[in-house]
Length: 364
Image (cartoon, rainbow, N blue to C red; front, side, top):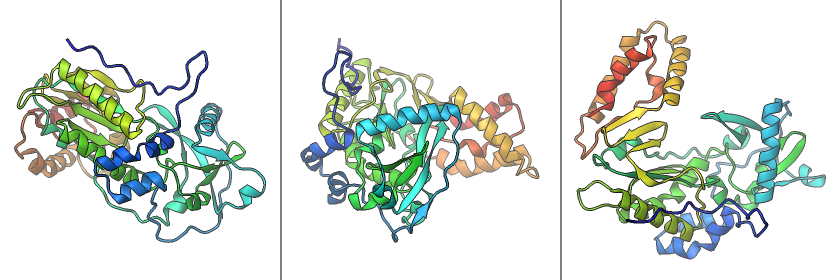
């Protein structure tokens, strides 16, 4: 029997001291030869070596945002996150004349996504001068055609994904920000920049291609990766396959300098995998909404109904079903499911009724 894979050790120095791991933009640049060996394009290599290739349409003008007060709970988190990012080299604090040299100084603020706080930048000014490149996120609908009944699945998360890419020195003066009375400059790609998801997704493309070349049946959504490991032709992945696949992932990402989160992964194989707000169940062959996502869908539906009052719930749901029908009737190997966007299920009906309408859409 294969032994369990060890979680990636990227948590920092040991309690008794020691050397902390280099920041992710350092480890990624050190691994540039391995990126080349995967066939990464010159554009991908430039993003890693020179910094994020922001597609500017023109340079932003001089701007100073008006500071605003922050609640105590958010301020506590912001102070800790500021110190963490300063220690990691993601930001640097500005003083005196350096502050005057910045072209754009925006606000930093705390948002909560999936119940977790995150410090992001109000990048509306620089975003207005960035070309909104079109690209496509991978979805659960694509994964559905690849999974097999009974697959043992794994998932992993890249820690501080955007911070693997530096900002070019000439671009940093457009991404200064103020928070809690202090002024900072972004050294790495910030959360809130419009082009960040596009740049990161494209940089990761050769990584995803290499995983699939090795037989992984996975999807990648920004920093989240999940799916089935390599297995025998036409057979579901086993626990042993999951352990071997997890080790292969840790080795590949380590060689690429991509730092994995030490606690967010599921490495030993499971037939019930939480992924992108859903529960992927290969034993029952279902894609289910998690309880948290169901509550979010219901709350969004109630808010949207206040605007769409003339439309009845049944009309809205039938319109969604008609729109999804073509995709859902396409033949798929293994499992078949549809990713239904929560905000389209606007409905005054109780959750039991919503589930009744969703059942034929989310089952085989």
